[in-house]
Length: 452
Figure 1: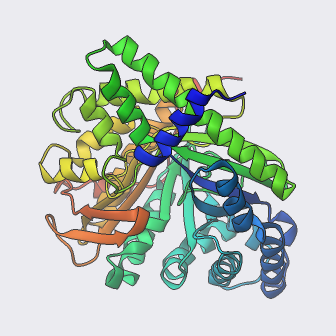
Figure 2 (figure 1 turned 180 degrees about the vertical axis):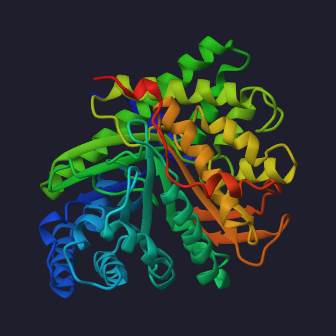
């Protein structure tokens, strides 16, 4: 039973500290939609998505009114399309992307994830066809998100996949150049991808998941920042305890909403992802949390240690609050979506190299970073490989969402609007790794992958 104090605290979090349910994401299996005729497969996909997700937006709005909690996004994730489409004779898979886009529009969600391929150990014909379809698919749709898993701690790092993906990122940027290369904001490259992630653009419905499931993503950087301000000059142990208790409260709220949505929609509840996912709004920034801990600017010495404390405390609080914490749970550090990160880049405090160090202890990786449009494909591949290595050798998820903004140079800005925000174009190293990445093949898995 909630006490009056807890109810009032929650009201304050919502009204003053930007607390929200960032997303209710319905995962839908499309494995039963495969067909040798791609037209028949697309009909099945459209019919299944609209049948199952038709009530999703309405259910979210009803729950928001019942509990007085903002539910910002209602989204869908589906089985990686490379797996579904491979049985068909389609010359490319853009028709599948168009079908996903139409279905998402029909049910009223803002994003649908799962135009994806899992190629950490090698390609099938369908995998390669999907990856090569990404530039046109993302440039011709509004709601479709794509992801590619190029590495795991058990398989190693597929450098051939990384090099192909890097060329795809460049082509996607060029095809959406008139919109500041926004297509790249809908494409994520993963190592150790989670199969129950409710956040876009990396969400897809994993092959071990049920036919349909509800996952929720909760966010509360403003709430955590306010809690840190209240404890003042507490030592780091007390600071961690404060964050952990706040993450506990946020997670409980997320599970409550997720279970209510699952019950209303008649599908199983999956997980709650308790992630500090920032927005461009003032006061809703992970960078500002680190600064309240005592850093002059995010990116200053100590930023990696402060982020490690934050990420660990959030995970501990979430694990205490729910037995079904999943997804990416922890702290996100996207540049374009975080006002504090943008300010740190503008001030010269934050570089790509420092961000890379911080990804060793955060929940995702190099996220929503604009780089010059003339950055070579091989340099993009090397950045992705570095990030994948952090994930593979530390048994954690890492990801890269780079935007090589066509026609832009260091110091220019890209503007996406909404939750995707805006970003300064950041410098990358002028030294080449072309000979290294062009060797191809796989970087073998680390020895500690041999656990059987």
